[in-house]
Length: 115
Image 1 (cartoon, rainbow, N blue to C red):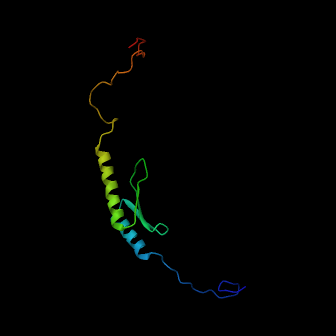
Image 2 (cartoon, helix red, strand yellow; image 1 turned 45 degrees about the horizontal axis):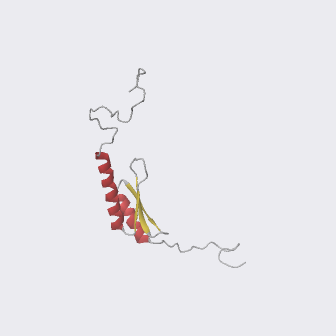
Image 3 (cartoon, rainbow, N blue to C red; image 1 turned 30 degrees about the horizontal axis):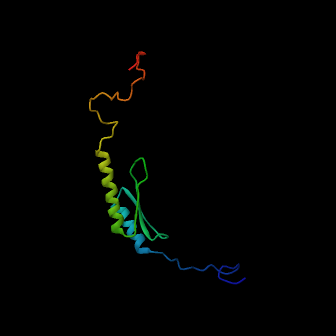
């Protein structure tokens, strides 16, 4: 058996290559600037990804090939979150009106009387 890793050979240091170092450093910088997001760089896709760390019913993840693009997508997602939070849901609306009885003909109400 030949080669550097065969038995009996002394340990030797191997150069460790850091793939896309500047892009990974930029993703780390974005993660520090945008505290509510986790930003990373995908080597396989060669793109930036950001995952929102706020609580919500669904995972919010954005992707773009450039840092400027992923920042824009993060802004859009945050704006959509703010708009959604500001819009009252049907459960929170209290208009004081009674619910519609339309389409309830023939159904029984409490007390056993027909509508």
